[in-house]
Picture 1 (cartoon, rainbow, N blue to C red):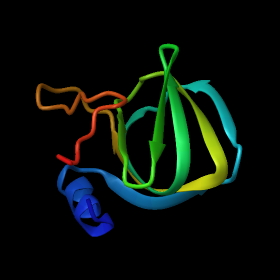
Picture 2: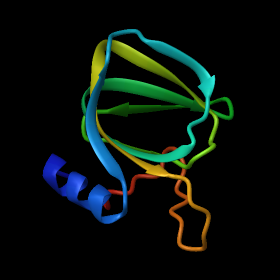
Picture 3: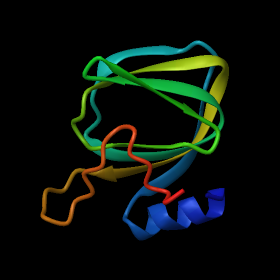
Picture 4: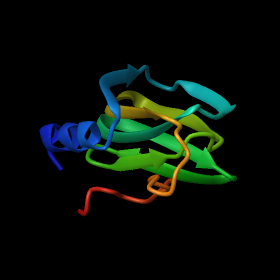
Length: 107
């Protein structure tokens, strides 16, 4: 999926969008966010650990984490650049509840 298409889909679904970078070999211990995350990896690699299972994401991969979902992050040796959408938690029956490893791109 192209960056522009992904960004349009994020905005359509109510996400705030930004491009972000994490330096090589960054490790972030287990934590959770008070917002939903949907991200497209543009360059590099990031591994998310959720409930003891590691999920590696590389260029072109999409990851999704619902608000409150505990995870850890480990960035590869080249760092990682990604386009990320963040949507504040708002309970309701129409919420997107995809989890790690669930590609929302249709690819």
